[in-house]
Image (cartoon, rainbow, N blue to C red; front, side, top):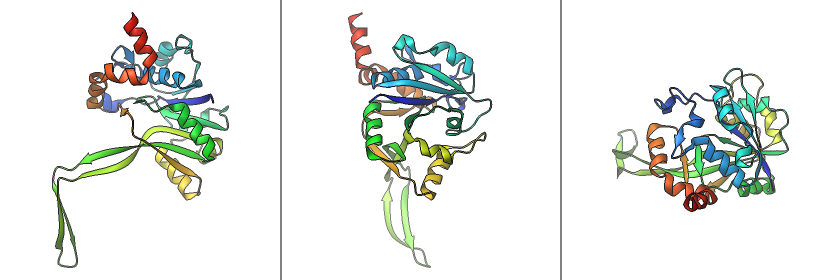
Length: 246
């Protein structure tokens, strides 16, 4: 089924400086496209019927670049924050959200099929579904375990690698979740998750093992450019075919 997506793109991108010193992060180039242009095209290719971009910092530049989305065959409109409202707070400014909708960060590159993710959420009946990715975190030191009053060492692991399921920055929500978001003040995704847990809402994970890259730091940006030619064929296969024909 078709779906609506809210793209969160109001941040200043301070971690990505110096690339964001003059232009907002969503239109910083990766390969021959802007970061968020890839996300927009992927959404449309996966069946997204309408994209609303939540903006604050340098919003006029982003609006000028993406306009109404028609050049990609989609529909884009905008919601402007007068002041920063955190990662989830901007949702309270969007009054015409449907019974189910997707929310994602504007700097996430993934070959997750957004349409299939949305359909799974709706079919599950959950209040919210979070796409999660297994991330490996290496440790540079030997890790010791001890117990008892004399601190007797009972185990040692040399430079272990810990594995965690982390949020991909891609979510599906049912409309009732909006009642947890306070109006006109900053409210983060972590606050929403905790409020849902405390309120015993039906909150589910959607494990994904494909490609995922959150372009949050300079090293992530460098990786995105290094992998661009390979990754763009996964995210936008039709675009790759057109490029080869040209």
